[in-house]
Length: 416
Image 1 (cartoon, helix red, strand yellow):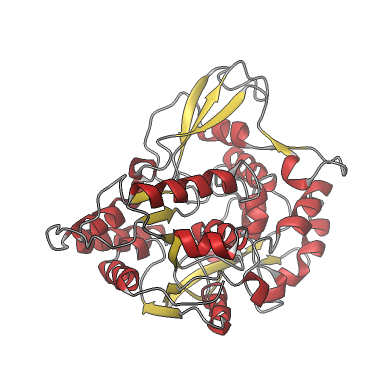
Image 2: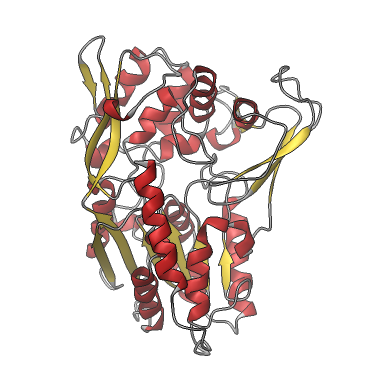
């Protein structure tokens, strides 16, 4: 699967970089703010006198981002252990405030707001440049810590300021929000936690590219198998599988990104336990966590954050024009057959459970945004690109061309 994904990504990059030479953008064209996919934002972890993992260097630094190629003295296992959040189970502490870094570990954004903070999206930026956009002027990146949910880490205040600054720096032009994969969850949270008057002033429209709004099945799997951030591959050693699974266990975004039973019900099995013959669907997540004897905090986090970003009911419609994109027709992992429910297991392709999708997100996930067809005034469209890989989508010239067309279409005139 990884080889197929990489092949499709290469093809998409070639297509994008073959775009026409840059032209001047229309003076009235909306600036773009991108919300990256899972771990698409560059973070720097600085470590000073840590004792959490005595076998790892006590001080130093490493970076966190998909396709990270920067050298570091920290092994994959050490990085996992130092990225693992601490959880305070005190019920009198609000859930968003229960998470903290390991002692001696601090995290900072690298080049926040700039296109250099999201290297995976280079092809997307080049596609916009070919249409006259200018990096870091009318192309900005709304970075976030992918371990956290949008009610944490100052996301809402920071992102509102970025949008407002981008609006002012570009002649008071409303901004087009573009999100890829998990990014649309953060953009949707912004839109549903701002006022209609704020959206009317600052937002031109919203383009979710395979938005993970109701979650996806494979996030339940990573509680047992782990997932390596640098290549989105599954660990191949026991130590790495244990450290990676533990890291995802305390990350609230794991649960936010897992398939929501209110949308999925029992439509797909996400875990099959060979030792008992039992299938677990999203609806069965309480039994899954209990049968696996996961720490009690896992259930606490799951109950709060599964389905956390609301989108399906009228109260949670984004309140702006939406042109959405999805892929289809590619076998997509939604779960796994495990010998038992112990954590830190090494898996291979023979164990995966599949259904139709875009290689990363299943059809149920990608079709859920159709709920927005019921928006009473604002426009909504969903374009399907059969065979278009999830990871190649933001690099695809057809996707970029449709985005530009949507940007050039006047906003709907809707009451506030």
